Each structure stands twice: as C-alpha cells, then as structure tokens.
Amino acid sequence: MRLTAILLITVVVTFVSCLTAAAQITCTSGSACQVNFVPVFASKGGNATVTDSIIQQSGSTVTVNGSLSASTFEIGGTVFDFGSTSTYNAFLGFAGNPGSPPSGYSNLAAGYGALINLTSGQGNTALGVSAMSVNSTGTNNTAVGGGALGDNFSGEDNTAVGDAALVYNSTGSNNTALGFSAGPSSDNGNLSNATAIGAWSNPTESNALILGGTGSYAVSVGIGTGSPYTDYGLTVTTGGQGGVINGGVVVEATGGNLYLGMTNGTHKFRVDTNGAVYADGGLYSSGADFAESVAIRGELSQYGPGDVLEIDQKASRHVALSSHPYATLVAGIYSTRPGVVASPRHIDDESSRATEVPLAVVGIVPCKVTAENGPISRGDLLVTSSIPGYAMKGTDRRRMIGAVLGKALEPFAQGKGTIEVLVTLQ
Image (cartoon, rainbow, N blue to C red):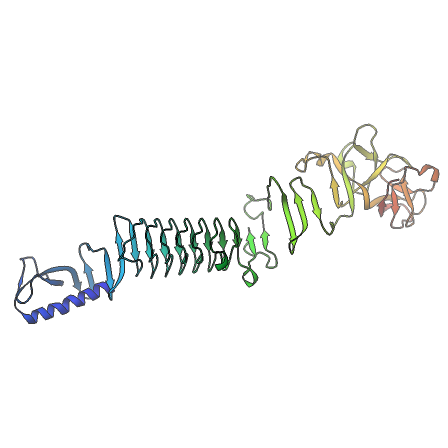
C-alpha cells in the first residue's frame, strides 16, 4: 500500500507539471483517459499524448490492475523485495541483495537482512530480522526469529526457532534449536546432530539432546503431567492416559548399564544390563528381612504372614506349616513385609504368585507364637510347637540342635499371638 501511494503521488505530480508545459493533451485512443485511472504520458512538451496506467484510485482505495514485470521493488531507493520464478526465490522486507541475484534456488526470506548474503545455497527459509544473514552456501536450513542461525555460513539441515536460536552455528549440520538463544554457545558453535529445547539450552557436544538451560534457566521436565516437581529434573506420571500408558520409564540397553547415578562425577548407583544392582552407600528398604520365594504344599489360602514353615519332605523346594514340636525341618517364617525377595524365576514370570510365599530366612519378622511351653521372654530361643504354624519357647536343649527358628525380640505371656522375631536358624 505504501509503495502504491508513493507511485500515485509521483505520477500526479508529473501529470500536473506536464499540464503546465503542454499546449494540448490528447488521449492515445478512444478507450484511453478513463475516469479514476492515473495517466501515463506518451510524449512530453508541446501537444502531449496520454494513455492509462495500471493504477486506479476510487476514493481512498488504490488498485493495481495487471502484472508487474520488474523483479524488484524499491522504497526510498532501497530494494524492498525481489524474486525470481526461474529460481523459485522470494525475498520480502529489505531482504537479500538483488544487485547480485543468488544462483541458489527455492529460498524464502522475509525480514530486514534475512539471507542477505546468499549465493548458491538452496532450500533455505529465513523469517525474521537478520535471520541467516551470513548464510552463503548452506542448504535446507530453516530459521524463524530475529538473528536465528545468524552466523550460519555453510551448515546444512539445521532448524532454529526463536530469537538468536542457533545463532553461533557456522558450519554445523543437522542441529535443532527451539527457544530463545537455544543452541551451542559461542565456545561450541559448530556441533552436529545436537538438539536444544528451551530458552538458553546450550549443548556442548554433538549428538546431544538438551532440555532447558543451566543454573537459573534450568527446567523441570514433566511427562504425562503439566505440574512436574520443581525440585526434581524429571517427573513421569502414568495411568492418566485412558489406560494406554500403564508403566513408567523403560530403558533397553545392549551394553554398559541400564541406569547410572552419579554425584559430582562419582558413580554412586548403577544397574547393569544383567540386572545386578550396585550401590555405594547401602540399600535401605521399608521391609525388614531377606526372603526366598518358595512353593507351598496345598492351597495358598491355608497360609498367612507370620506362619512358621518347615521343609516339605514330599516335594522338592516346597514348604508346609510346621506341625510338631522341636522340628529340625524348620525353614523360616512366612514374611509379612520382606525387604528383599529372591527367586530362581524370571522377574516377568508371575505364575508362582498363586503357589509360592516369601520365606524369611534372615532378618526381623512378625511370627505367630504360643505360650504352650511357658511365657516367652526377650532373647528366648524359639522352636516349632504342636500348633501348626506356631513357634514356642525352647527349653529342652537336647532337642534344640538344628531346631532353633530364632530369638524373641518381644515378650509374650499366654495364649496365642504374634511377636517380632530375629530369624537365626541353627
């Protein structure tokens, strides 16, 4: 609109000047000199002849009818835009340098100085002031935002969205940056296959994915949630996607570790690809014992946590409820809340859940006891009793060899009940 107005004013001034100089004005044809059309003088001085231009004004509306054959437009002596149908290039908003049309093709630039130094590069899109302003031979780059990919000279297949995104990249390729000043810093400008997401996210090595910046620019990442915990780097929430996502994080590796945790560069925790867990500092569990998953005789409904169990002589690796006093077949206690459960089965094999129980062999567990052999005091050695699944105080030292289940950690006066027991088979 501003360009058309300037052209209109120029033509009107020229027309008035010519009216003063011309003795007579003649229309070049019977259809010329139409109402509201800006005239074009076919001759000057003396008896001037006039035809119609392609510019028409009706009230405050100015219309250009027809096509413009020129490849450039200028405003105030400065090229505003230019393009070429042969090379499929289009430059808008004081972009590019029409004095030296680029040989590259399929480029689009919009914004002051965008792609202004392009020569043979092709397939580039630059939107924003000084976007890809240095780019000469780089191809298939996309820059959206002021100064985006501003230093790129020959890098290829880069995508930068955000003011100053990938601004320091010069020759690196296949990089992606989303966010204000996202991308390598000035010290690590030319990387490849790096991805930076978030304001001031600055990768320092190739083939890296960076989410957020560092220090005050660090972010908390949420997957499946819009409210990640701000004091943790990653929050994963599942179960809220209509049952489509039911689990958390899956890591699949063919070498090295499945997980590695470090503090100030020192390894503190890792899980290798065989599933072995290593911890520098110990493992703390809310459970209080070590248990083995062992098959039972009969139905699972016949057993409960705290039961005293003995080796089943009718089946290998099976246990049953203890059934007589001072049994040397005593094996342990049905764990109420084991800290660790060991099993020879694969971790994904769930077939044993209906036929096996956690047998506590080391640690502190609740145990069913009876006072049939007298009240139990702290520290008493416990053995099996005549009541199936119950322990009692051992008093016959001759029969206690190989029959001790553990030591009482709590007193028990009479009847039947449950106390804490330190499992120490002997």
